[in-house]
Image (cartoon, rainbow, N blue to C red; front, side, top):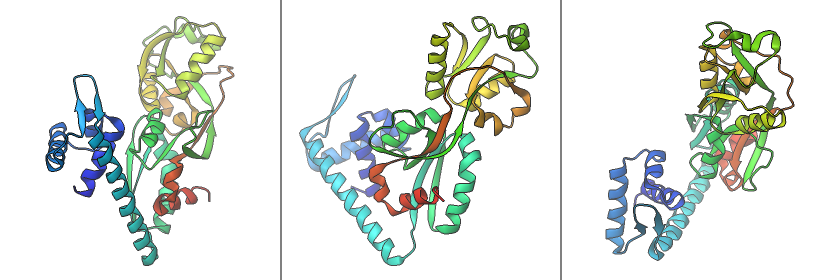
Length: 293
């Protein structure tokens, strides 16, 4: 088994989902199936039990998983030892964050990181910030930048980079709804169209606040990513709720305005997150330590 196939196999052992592993590891579903079939043929035993609803590891699959984990860990340890002898860290680390976070934090962090560790190659993936913690915990990424939840999973280490309040935003012009619904700061919450995140801390904060205020919001759209909320609001489809950091760094900030809404939603703490066990990796630890400077 090649090392990259070993990593793909371990990812499938974790997700037990061929489609998810195929997408995360950038291999086609057919290539993934052939790889597993080839491995099963070499061992002479099935590694997974599959039906239309679920995927499960067999006893042979569990034994192969333990072997693959030991092989991966031994290879990584050898890699670290050789790097220590070379006195200069080299290799790859993966980072996941939203587009806004890449503007707000990643540019400065990577600039300093490149100066200190020119032989480490960062692999940057961007997407909805609400996905970050899941991707880190599922071992799809090494480091993430995300809104930090009040309850932090015990497996995660977190380093706060900034705090940002949540703000309601409206379009400057081009309304597709009656602008009188938000006239003079008096918002008709049950009528004005709302654009909210599909999930994540902003959505949770909004739902909790609406419940406290006994408001049943008129939700026009639910989207993935704060940047998409800003885009839809700037086009006049409704009002939205986003971290102010997103507004400050948006190329559309001149097409939206912040509404004067007095709410008690707590600010977001935005920070780095990583699996604690991964801080044993010198490459990841180097980036982690640099963020504290």
